[in-house]
Length: 206
Image (cartoon, rainbow, N blue to C red; front, side, top):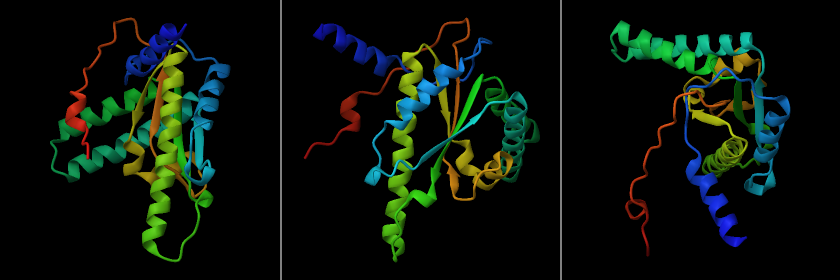
């Protein structure tokens, strides 16, 4: 029994990977609820549970969000000096990754859930703890997705255009988008597994 639990744990951790393409099979609402429930059980600073999840349920909503973000990114790429063809192609790929996902969830940090301090240094630390709390919840969600036979990808693009995402999704101004999760079932072709660098290159002991 202990060996089985050990095997199951490491299969969950090592088996999860970022996948950006999905099959056409829909994800049942009850499965999405289980993913959100797993996220909601994550640890958080002061137990504030500052995560807020926006489930973009409609195809039209995903299209609007993807189009707006792609347009902004294309403009940023052009401003950075990218060739027009390259900027258009990269923006189109980003748009397809969002519109091709059966489930899109935008995790947000609720700034109203954070403590208030009179000095900027502690307030910055409080904000950072909130961001970390949302990230922990997202990791729970991604592991749950793998457990239920789904694949997913965490996209960071919304942090580059927070006001735009807030506007498109009609979010409260104190809900700060922290990323975008695309979720679905794997496509028919096999998933590629990427190796990790040796652990000792990432650890310092004192």
